[in-house]
Image (cartoon, rainbow, N blue to C red; front, side, top):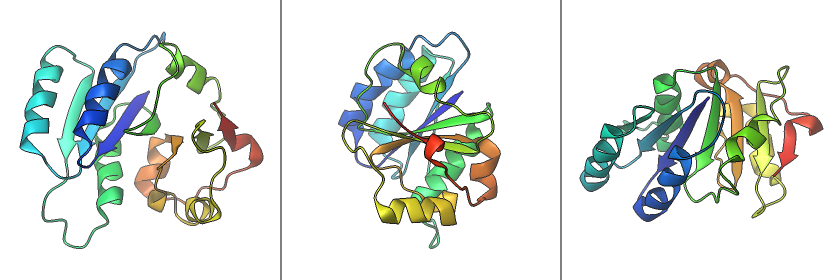
Length: 172
């Protein structure tokens, strides 16, 4: 399992979330990949210090010259390319993890036949119509603002359109 967290001027939220992610009880292997959209030097130094003590944490950043590429799409692509596992968890940086067993519970919702699963958080119990449309039209354009996305790495990298059924949208 590869957990991708993208951030943009959200250092405080990341400083709160990262220790929680690194102490998860999963029972399998997982890694955490942080993608900094703005390439903040202070954040980079802190992440390098964190990585020194944690071999399953890595980070990357978006170039300041993206030449018209959507920064969110670039961040997700960079995170997916850095991932070592088939399944990706795309987390918003301000997510609140419920317990140390959170990842194990999340993985119980994975559907082996599906390319992706949307996990709705308590904060927002439904996808808005535009997000749902974008997700179906072009997966790589979906912006997981209040949802957690569980997807296959190849689906994200290939930019496949992903059709969701009702069983692919779950609530935590």
